[in-house]
Image 1: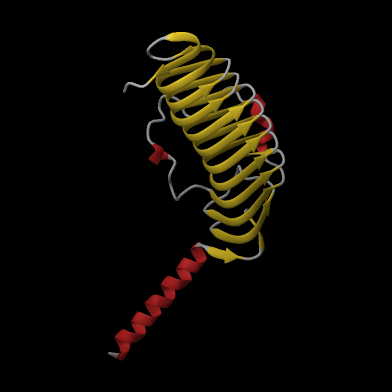
Image 2: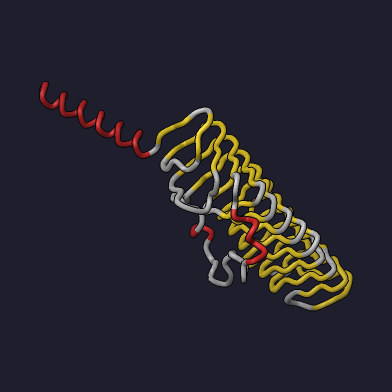
Length: 229
């Protein structure tokens, strides 16, 4: 009986040490370049694009030299197109980083990350999932955007629930539910409202307001609609 009890205690001890080694907790300031780490408080690092694994930030994350500044040079959007059919493809616990709170990147973030809260970027942002407010100067890219996407030039997502607002263009490549406001709005499947100079939706369930509006039923100036499935 004593031998079994000792073996049980030893097994529990080994399991606890393994779990601690896999995901250590750091407080109040740490770097996100330390893999398998949960940071409670302030997270700081140079770049979120490379060699980061299983990092979770609960608080404020600051990226000093993000690669979002090169976004204008990308030959095409990083958001998946027609092949993007399942949200579960991006809802994974194996992402490089998960940020719960505020993400700040003066140059802009390009990362394998999910952001829950506020995402503030200088040039551009590219994330798997953003839940909350995401703001950039040039462009917002997200596979799944829940909340508000705001950019001066444009927003681009595969799945959008909420509001896309920009001065130039909004794109929803798979499905969207909510409001698009820009000079040009383009959606594959849109449920809600589009407001702009030109609005286009392959499958619309809602209203379009603009100089030219196109959906699966008709093309009209000023106002267009479809409420049939």
